Amino acid sequence: MAPSMFWHTNLLALCMLFSGFLVSCHQTDNLNILKENRNQISSSSNFLFGTASSCYQFEGAFLSDGKGLNNWDVFTHEAGHIKDGSNGDVAVDHYNRYLEDINLMENMGVKSFRFSISWSRILPKGIFGDVNMAGIEHYNKLIDALLHKGIQPFITLTHYDIPQELEERYGGWLSSRIQDDFSYFADICFKYFGDRVKYWVTMNEPNLMAVRGYRLGTYPPARCSGIFGKCSAGDSEKEPFIAAHNMILSHAAAVSIYRTRYQKRQGGMIGISLDTQWYEPFSNSSEDIAATEIARSFYVNWFLDPIILGRYPKEMVQILGSNLPDFSKNDSSKLSYGLDFIGINYYTAKYIKDCLYSACEHGNTWSEGSYFVTTEKDGVYIGQPTEVDWLFLYPQGMKKIVMYMKNRFNNTPMVITENGLAENDNLNPSITDTLNDIHRVNFMHSYLNSLANAIREGADVRGYFVWSLLDNFEWLEGYSLRFGLHYVNYTNLERTPKLSATRYKQLMYNFHIQLQTHTAQK
Ligand SMILES: *[C@@H]1O[C@H](CO)[C@@H](O)[C@H](O)[C@H]1NC(C)=O
Ligand SMILES: *[C@@H]1O[C@H](CO)[C@@H](O)[C@H](O)[C@H]1NC(C)=O
Ligand SMILES: *[C@@H]1O[C@H](CO)[C@@H](O)[C@H](O)[C@H]1NC(C)=O
Image (tube, rainbow, N blue to C red; front, top):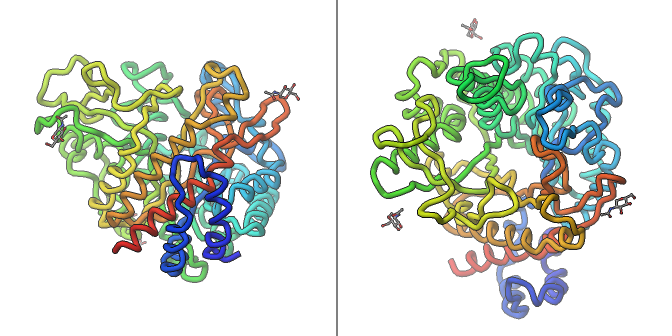
């Protein structure tokens, strides 16, 4: 069905279905808008609504069909890293149940599925071994099955996992050799899948990988200095910047291959997804405002400035000096390929307080930019707390982060590649409460409203992906946090839609109407 037909024929049904819902649904008004604005409706219907996932958190099939070991396999199998002692060996068995999962997506009416490719499933030993054709075959089947239902594959090349071989041979992201390995992998993916895949994300949250893998040591390869954590080796003041430098150049190398060999023929877009938080100055003092800009530089602009503007943020250059690697002439020419869209993973906000000029009892070290991060001011949280300790509700930050990116990066197209809310299993013994997740529906509603406001003010946002399609393996938290629109019973792996899965249609519809009303008023 053509998208404009979809909105037309389903309008009445949706209005009746959700008449008691958050949004008042004035049928006649909306129908008039529909009739008057067919063209805009269909163009706004190109907006890519979807759900997101990643291979390690979803697939399972640990060493099936020739897959090699990756860094997360090794890390989760070492005792003590994961809260509930679990791992992704089975996860939610999406590798075997993908057809069932695509049916769930079809029922929700989403247009796209964000998933990542397991690097060690395609290249069990990276560049040092053969291509595993069974891995290629698996993703071919997944892509074809999605397209058969009209769902666009939105592919991340690496979502934290790398073949363990690369870690052991040369120290993974710490070595510039990974640039060749990553471009080799990317090339294979474009070659085998790019005829049908129009959206590529090179990496998911490289900023988080650099900080957790090489400063705090909480993610593999678990490297850090003594004052930051308990690691057997590492240098928290230098290694995050070296790893990040290699991630940035690996992204650039993959984009350069896509641009020069595939993009013209295949016609897709390529970007990168960053972990973002909205940073609010603790006060209006010029020091706190400057510290807030430093915080942005040391987290997101750290990656996006080099990729889009060709250089590190000036705050990082000033503070880090020679601890920040340089881009060689050759590097700079690779960076000139930039990206086609910025992927934004947004959940929450923090206050930032200056520690460079002001006395702070505790703040980040100079190598992190010397600022204090807090979620509380005068005994009040920045937003309503949730069942997740780091997640405070801050929907207005969605608009703020998008407008910030719009202004800094000249309105480069953006996609919200993650946004979502979790339940904590330990606080919710009752399955009935978990399935009746009205709090998640309200969460999505408020964040989407904020996003619609940003688009009304001219931000070029092309899509929104909820984290996540299913409950899944939530890294250090194991299976204790449930981010899914579908409940997964971890005993028999049965999936059950939560209220949010059935309400997603209404949320998408409401979002389109908000944008149409705006267009109609212009
Ligand atoms: C900073 O100033 C703005 C504009 O005057 C005001 O809206 C805001 O509440 C102030 N923030 C703080 C933390 O005082
Ligand atoms: C820079 O790139 C050129 C052309 O690809 C190459 O010949 C040269 O060796 C490279 N220089 C360095 C330092 O890698
Ligand atoms: C999960 O599945 C097991 C095994 O079939 C069943 O005994 C249990 O009741 C299920 N749990 C829930 C919450 O439905």
